[in-house]
Image 1 (spheres, rainbow, N blue to C red):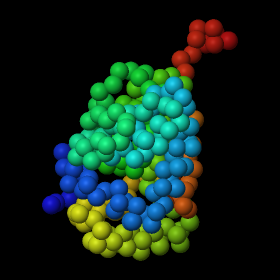
Image 2 (image 1 turned 90 degrees about the vertical axis):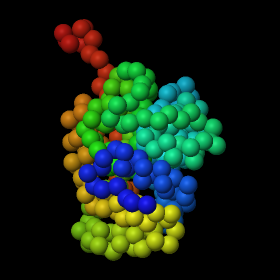
Image 3 (image 1 turned 90 degrees about the horizontal axis):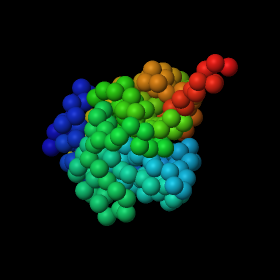
Image 4 (image 1 turned 180 degrees about the vertical axis):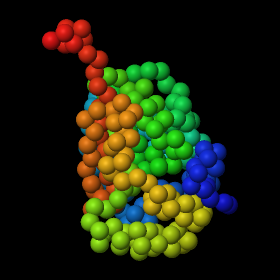
Length: 238
């Protein structure tokens, strides 16, 4: 089984995730030393999904995070372009939709919030995905992104990039069904933009009030933004 390359051709990335879907959740937990649960809980807090809201969990994989968001009473849908991942999460009691993040099959302003956890860096056209998320969120709605990022302190950054990521790849050879896929994932982390650059990309797609919170020294960052509300004529004249 081969891995996707960093050009991120959609069919290559989808095929790679189809191939690792069966053991993905377990391998992910092992290779993050259990931190994935903490990061997922922090994302749920930032999302603050509420009863009656409609939430799109984009790049949702097997729907692990989607189920957690739905516990608050919101209607949550898991969307992913890897049908293999969705099939392996079919036992979870949430709706699932095959979808490309750059061309979402949803109407304008369909959701109160969109969230993406550890999937945005696998999209071949990130600005297009951010614009699509903007399109399907109602005015006043929000976007929450949890993604690998850049540790802010230089010694920790060097330790993470030069030691821990190599350790991750070594662990992959022991616990993952396709170690080459996790080599790609480690490389994609190294090539991913830092917190400020992603924030600028979000602002460039129209999102406002962009802010981020570093988790685990910046190994992961939570970005939050809002789609601005329409300005009424009375407000515009004042």
